[in-house]
Image (cartoon, rainbow, N blue to C red; front, side, top):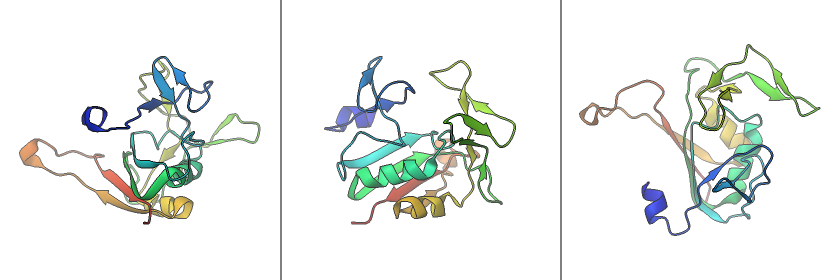
Length: 166
């Protein structure tokens, strides 16, 4: 991966539920997106791939990403925008007792860490842009890739770019 090869201070991470943020587990740095271990304004770029539909508290995630980004820093990410013509649907939330409360029948996506898969907590719509602004004050652009000459034409391949104000 180019970031790993060329990024001077590149840090790859994975989430493990029972491992504290910032520690190492199975060769990975563990990071909980809801409670990142990075200092304020210490990161130039966050990259997440198909994660935001699985977090229980996206407001906390976007707030943490905004907190850790330097001014002018970016969060570049992919997330399936399945609710194109309607608002985001919340599918599951964290109950006060810290269990997961399902608001609709649970669905799962494949996961490299679990044979059960990853629970879908949000079916995002284009209103994700407002959710990011409300949580972190970051402007977000949705880039729709359609490059047939490179063999790229499909649904659900948007790339979102959020920028922290300089």
